[in-house]
Image 1 (cartoon, one colour):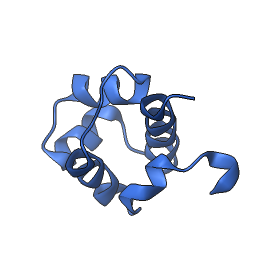
Image 2 (cartoon, one colour):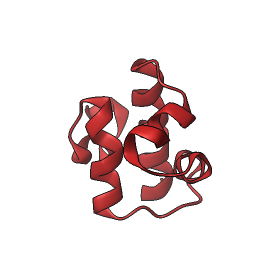
Image 3 (cartoon, one colour):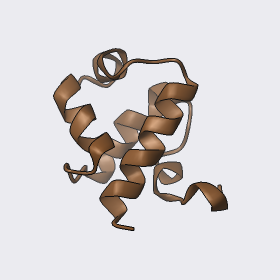
Image 4 (cartoon, helix red, strand yellow):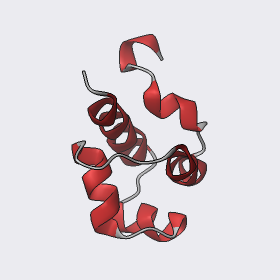
Length: 72
């Protein structure tokens, strides 16, 4: 699986587990909702800095977005 899709799937899983909408997460990160949507769909290629921004409000480490669910 492409790393962008993996990060996107994990982001969506953690975001939903935290009970946040894409809009709420985007606001917390200082990003636009459509950017968060693009990351979740695997069509955006976020930098490590952006992964860190996305992970912080979810209470996770950025590297957790890059680990397959079955290995987490």
